[in-house]
Image (cartoon, rainbow over all chains, first blue to last red; front, side, top):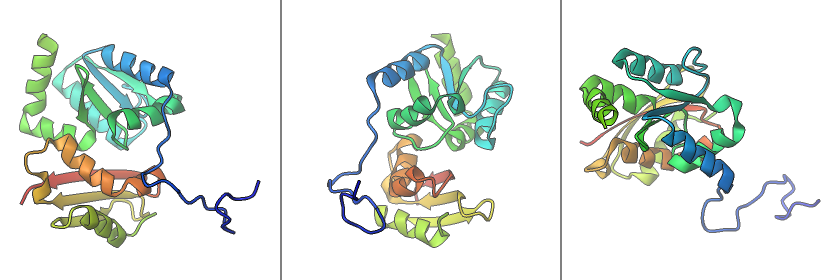
Length: 130
Length: 76
């Protein structure tokens, strides 16, 4: 198949005026929504609670452990569709991603800031009390 | 792999008044830390502030030229 753009290097030039995005299919979106609703605190991460596979993901696990809150994790390394889908869903390009009562909190950097400021403990107390 | 200069330029294009510091965490050019100070962050949640920075580096993140990016934001 010849390159649509006719470029010798085969580069695809985006003919649209907006960035191309992969469109997440409905079932992946549904699965993400279900996961987010499955527990008050949900972490999309690399690896799992017992064996984080990345330093940033580990930061989040350690912080939540330190606060003694129950949380569920989903290993994005086990599921390429969720791994890509959650980035579109949250409009956030990196993993880990933390959801509290369905609200996106951010990743490792934000959790660390919020932990240090005491905001995270407060937020979680409210979330777990309801 | 991205050069720190290119990262700075990309962020300044999106946030013209920004003071930007870029650090290469591993020397490999793909694990970076950025500190961005900009008045554009005023009144925004941390998530939205970081989203502005990520937006400036959308291509590099999508292509995994930047594999990991630590972000710290502040207003002047």
